[in-house]
Image (cartoon, rainbow, N blue to C red):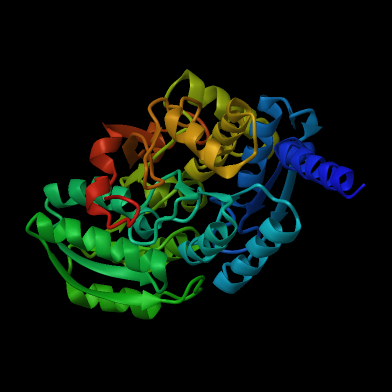
Length: 401
């Protein structure tokens, strides 16, 4: 009897082991969007990022392995500790398989630690620090939309070549702003220019007067705005009130979005040179996605919102191709499959997690050049991904030998 019981026990254990992957597939695929719904980055991501993820799920068919795909959302209030708490809860207790968005670099880096701990996938579509695929890279995190290195090298290089060889930075005082200042400063100095100084401001500050006065007093030709979202909009509006551009200095919006231009209006934004990864009016595919998004949100998508759609769809296709939700085979499929969708037609996911694709250099149109609402950009150049993004060997990612 003891021998029979032992055999039955071994058989049961073997059956449980073999059934493990099958049982895992019985739980619904769950995606978490961690975003800024109410603060400085809500326009560039927020509800639009949630909508982008929903559009991808709907386009995919709405289900995976015979069960409806689930979507959960939360706002970390742009706080790193809140992001860590939410991502831990989602991965550990709520069965979330992939988390996407991450509104700031600080929240992204905090969430990435949870992603590593639980060996679950994270895709960053909002945060921009180049450290995400550099010294802080993770085998489980992908960086999709843009980063501070790419923006610095497209916008910064263009401005220096046109004579903007002395800079003063107004910088958001956290890792994102520091990364922009560092990466753009490197571009300026490499081109023979000078960085005359910087002034650092708190996130989501309403008053830029003291920082603008410091920039004005520096006599720098270019005032580089090393911030984003509502902070960039407020800085530009207040710079106009101070007569900074009228006084001979120029502003450089290093990280700007079509939503920023819409908020500023063409009269104030005209002539700005900016870089983006996506613009709704580039081609038939971008226009079709832009129209679908507009019909739902009554505004055109930012590059982050289009990227959230793209990354979600790429992830879903990878899960289907892998035949499992397990992290490593899904990531292998994501890296092996080119990214071809409404966001980009030339994307590739590198070993360090960077999704490399073309970036575009735009000039904001004058009011009389715009033919319709959201017709804001003139294309100056398409910069291939291998020129826009930092070479993998130079990033300091410990995953790269």
